[in-house]
Length: 154
View 1: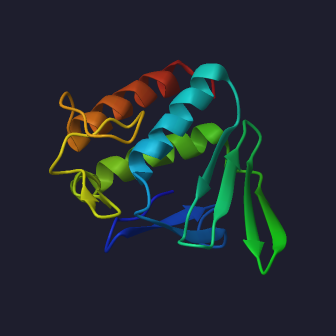
View 2 (view 1 turned 180 degrees about the horizontal axis):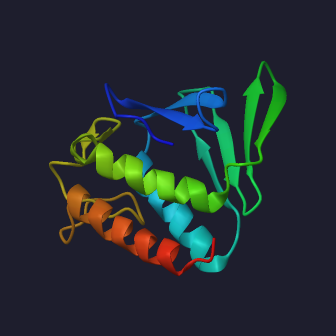
View 3 (view 1 turned 90 degrees about the horizontal axis):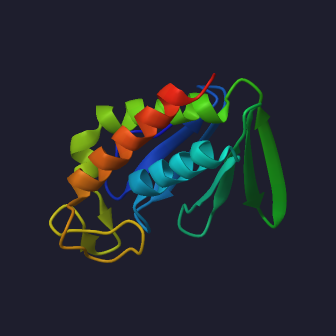
């Protein structure tokens, strides 16, 4: 789902090499926002949905138990793509694998001009927090999502 974070952006892939390919910029904390999305979705048994910003070219990902949708607005015209084989739970597993694979990059991820790896950050209100670093936040959210995935019936 998430590629290696580089130069303030990361690639997003839904549905494999023939599927959707997009980018997310450093306007927000991509890994934590994605982890929170799946944690809340699985916990409440709702679709996971999030808007990704490619700096003025947004797209929306909505993942359900039956498949995933990517909605783009290209020249004011909405485009909707459906991926039947890409369920919420399969994307949640893929997210965990991708964040763990590129953990060093996500720890050093910056949001705008703010280096969250150097400061403590509270993902719930986008403010500095004296209690957790970016690494601690990601590790805590990863463990929480792994437990929910394990408990979830696939």
